[in-house]
Image (cartoon, rainbow, N blue to C red; front, side, top):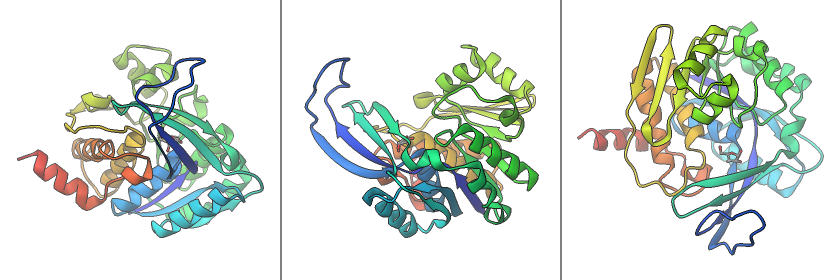
Length: 300
Ligand code: RIB
């Protein structure tokens, strides 16, 4: 099962705080660490740990973080021919995590905004070999559209995780097989606060499968006339960073391995829940074995 992830790579700078700061307030953090992150790279590493053969298309700067992130992805077994090394800083993110595991994330795109349409077109050979292409929205929108066009031309399945949320060009929606907003993203994408109505709007625009992640309430998928709900897994969450990325990667890995949508959702819920039980982005991504053991334990 081969996946190409086209997207962002960041170094996350994480501060553990008793509560999230207010406007104008200075707070002292209780802990600090750096950890590889970025929605694209998180999805790539998660899919690889879940057993997929993964290539990444993106960009890193020529700073120290760039080299560290490159070596980290290499160590995770990700194919890196599609990584452009550019002048200037790599992407990074300032993350605060409170005692309940909730976070705020501020992203500086750096090299991620240099992932150009031309660079993506040059990666046709890598994309040709994939079964699935995974996209998010931390590289320029016109590059995301180019990637989806190329994937569609090459008959690849495309999952779009519309995060961070923004209004999507109509063409992009028509090029995607699966879209995975959370409730807030769905409202922003569709202009409707009503889940069912928002989903109906996306399906009208040509998307085959809409999967809405509901946080502690699990997830729900809509395909043609069918609605499938998947129950949440109960865990003690300490940091929700990258839980959505893990969900997306696990969903594609499961669908690519031939699981039915209902089982794929269940698997993705389990993987996403596990990711909340550890601090940090790529430090929290579970392996295939960990997810399978967790599901067995939870179903006893
Ligand atoms: O989805 C979590 C990720 O969002 C973090 O790793 C951060 O880098 C931002 O891209």
